[in-house]
Image (cartoon, rainbow, N blue to C red; front, side, top):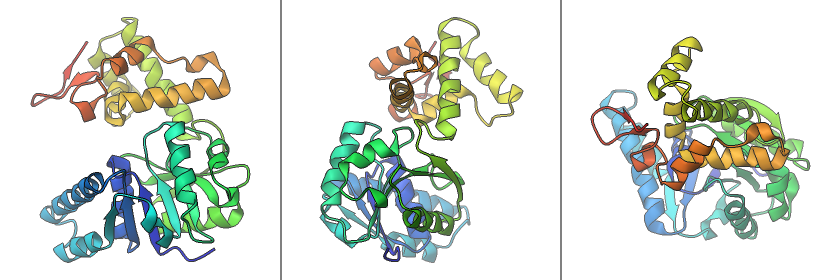
Length: 292
């Protein structure tokens, strides 16, 4: 496989922009793609804002920021990905969308290039059906916010080669992050454990076991977590949580992963958490206020 020098990122939202940022800071050239150039530029502008804040706080120099930003190119189509040795898909957590992206991108990749999905829950072997070379396809699951979180799950599908896993592990370690290896199972390691906990917290809220604040405070202090489960669900995005728990349920056919009815209602209402300004908490004021 070719040495990884150029990283292609498909999807310029919060996760994709974060992956682009840490890759550029680690001296990789980055091609940040989205469905149109305006969205890709918005993602790049978000990276610039994050780096500017770091400069203001004295965490990095202006020269380092300028060098990182110069390494990020944007595109409104997938054609430039032909230059990349590693392409990471960071689109929405819907299997049909991801499969279409993989099929389109795979036709453009250079020989030896690796394709990876940042999926948080969808089995890698199943996603690999969309690409011709399954040996060079794997999962590389970053956590949000990407520049802050130290962990990356590397997930091999049934056909993934050892060489592809080793190349991606070297890339992740160059970012200064810790690799956890997982075999292909819905939810992998972290979300297999996390999503049922978040879902159960919503069940407890819907059944009136405790107030929203008491559920969050109880878990935060009782389990020594940095934030409560309802706050964390809002941070992740309630639609993302629902998609992931649905993948666990439909893939395993285990009823213990049945999504909490209240979670479904919030998603149906468009109350998706911080990104929409309202989820389990209302973020329109100076301090978050419970919505239930």
